[in-house]
Image 1 (spheres, rainbow, N blue to C red):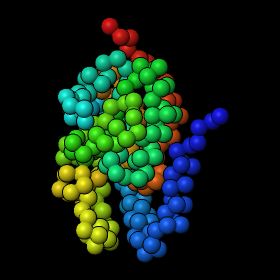
Image 2: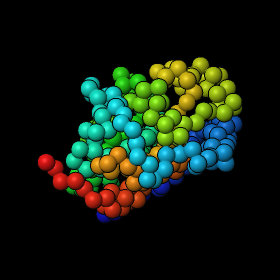
Image 3: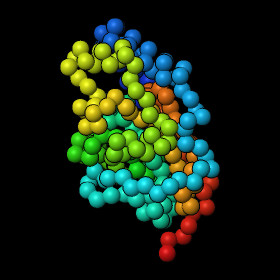
Length: 224
């Protein structure tokens, strides 16, 4: 039986929201998505062919994940997501574990999910779904900023959160409204970006096959 696509899974989430959310709250959410799509500036995003400077991300299990270590045996696949409680992220990451992670392992690639949420709050999403891949924290959104994929919630979205006594900076532990747009970045053994897919709309995310095709195109470095 074929796996249900990520697009269809996220469409189910949106349909549930249409059934259950207050119409005014749903409109704020949809308007924010539309604004992000309309104002997206792809010229800011990390580019295919760009050679990256080294970086290190805190692993939610402790320790650190350096770029050099991630690409030692093959390509690195970074999946940027918003935070552990994000409903769409809780659909996307299990999908990647099911539809992407096994084939990436067979290809010698390393998959890491990346969020700005602080490690002590971020680890719950890995535990909740029993994810087989690493989850790492992008401290202060530093890597997301370098990749040009950050956004800040609009005034209406901020006001709606405040009215509920919420602030995304408290949830993430960053103290800011900044979050990464969903993105997948594939990096080869020479630290060169080989694939980029950024989605300003958080209900649109990269399907597994597109990532696998990109990884298959990379000549892997044999393990020493």
